[in-house]
Length: 221
Image (cartoon, rainbow, N blue to C red; front, top):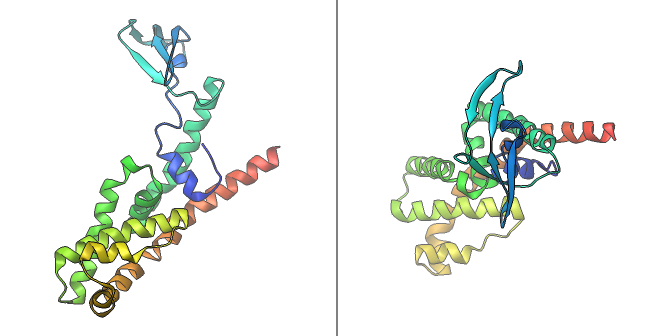
């Protein structure tokens, strides 16, 4: 796992391809290895033992197998990676309780794409509930489309520094620039202002952990 930045750490903590289960340890170091295009395939054989060498379960080959993503030279690399993920995931879990909206933003903007759907839906629901309070005459369906574009565009701006192309917003609404300036720019700015505080709220706790972790690594070298 990488601790280059808070955004990167959040992403890696929920990225299943960054590490794999320790199949060698699970199989009591009794495995058959074959090369595949996606990495090593380990066929587990033998018994899984507990701390006191008691047999927890027996695994008959070749029924159980797993594709291992190679992330290090030994099992200890995978164990360390899992521990590092757990540190960040624990902070995110606490954020989910203390600031659900910031948590939703973090998952929607920084987590791998497969993890984003529920949180983006929650952000969309939040923006639409805010819109309902404004008592504006704009069609709710169009505002919903604009709000979803706002979430995606602001997330890309936050992650990659990508400028927001309002031409896409006008295309979604089916209006020209003159009508945009007259009818829609006010709604756009209000939607965007609701999202602007969320990156700092989401990344603050993660940044503290990343800085502390990097400080410890530097001190250990």
